Image (tube, rainbow, N blue to C red; front, top):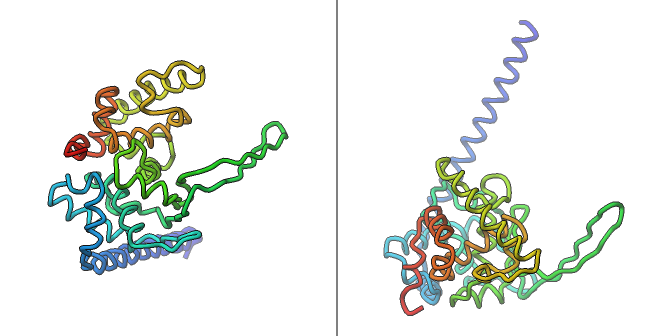
Length: 281
């Protein structure tokens, strides 16, 4: 047996082993999901959803679909409380807004790479040390949420207030928009799109982000960009997260001032956000 024949057998065996591992992992995942999908959605959890501005406006079919998604989300992610006990309300409400974003977006598993949700009771002070030209700078800043390293951080007092009424802001939507953004492999404000829509999306995002960035960093009057706020000018990833918040929380204002952004988000999320908030809100 030649050297190259041996190599072929070795690498072939490695390939078959990897394929077998991948098959078994998917099989176990499907078996786990089958068990999870048999779990009934509790009436007390549905009562929490009915207090949100969005759930009651979903069709009956979408309500059932998102309830299934919330159960799957709650049982496949680790919820960690820091300084508080994780409650069913936290799991249901965080799961609802996370799953609302993907309700009509084609994806096999919801937030597959996400492992943990860490929940703090109130805003967290974070220390950041940076270096430039050999000079180290230490800064403290407050976060209300964060998405990084297969983990989402949620500050519960803000999330709870924002969950039950329309406020422009929704930290859960914001952080999970980042998770969707990262599904393409990088945080750049471009979610997983159909190839035919990629160019149109990037052109529109770049145009509106550049306009806002210019106004903010030259201290100009923001005009209609007040709706988005200065934080959206940080980078394209934050811009996408903010406009996703506005799409679900302030769709009338977003459509009025940024009709192209509204249409692009509606095309991606495949949700009529105006219909979700039109009744008594």
